[in-house]
Length: 340
Ligand code: KG4
Ligand code: ZN
Image (cartoon, rainbow, N blue to C red; front, top):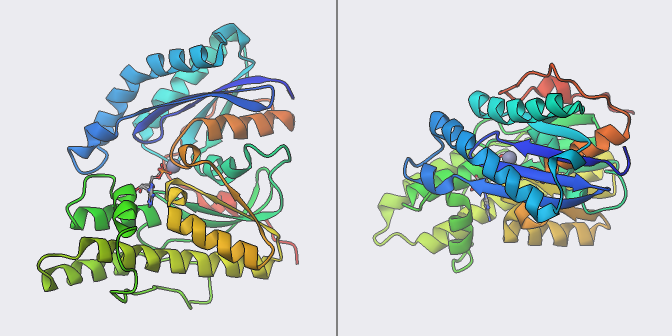
């Protein structure tokens, strides 16, 4: 399966995405975003998401084939995200990929969305994902993971309340910015003074790898009535710096203590320019190789799903047409034994 052509579908949340991986490289990655639709509601509405996947899936698939210059008969295996995510949205992508696999008598691989994010920074590297630390910072999750090899991960820590992206989005909402707030808060932060407000760095010295961002969001809420006009850019910059400080400090500690020499950043928040800059400085200072996905592959996409399916097929996996959806993140499946 080294030169296999894999078509992957991702519909876990509000992006309808189709990608094709052919001969070990990405040849198409199409994303139909529903962001403008959900923006009206200030967040993702599950039923609206499912209905939009239903109408967007086929045109997105056609666009992927036309940009790759390939057709359905060229596909050797089909893959789809089976969780975590919105159950009814996941089912649509899974059903379409399974249906195609059955019709064409090809294998079907179910891929975990978080594993897709986690390994995505290695996609353009000819080598396999290596022994490393992975930080996944998305809208729904904040995971710090020790990666041993494909499929063998140890979850070091996660958020105890809001995910990093969720905190960005909630602060954006408090400031009256459109959904999702993350990129807007980041853009405003560029013009602000990050030292103007001293905001909490929760759990910075907790001695473990857990994160907490809801206190930080609350601190921003208390700040607002004290100012008129609200110094939006300074608040964004001070908030962003607090998030980045905690993520960098705790992640670099995990890198040091696990004695790995590689770090991979992924998930929507890893688009953040300040986060990338601070991690680059920290990794340069300690001789650690930093793996980053291009911004278009940090937010939800099907390329990362196709890539994981490619790695697993290459390892000899047969596929599973009976695979179910798993809307919740199952931390227990991410607890590989850590060697002494
Ligand atoms: O990985 P992703 O596309 O979706 C999930 O699986 O959740 O991540 C989306 C999250 C949103 O919370 C969005 O606001 C955040 O990533 N995000 C950012 C930036 N770009 C996207 N957060 C901070 N700075 C950014 N530049
Ligand atoms: Zn995601």
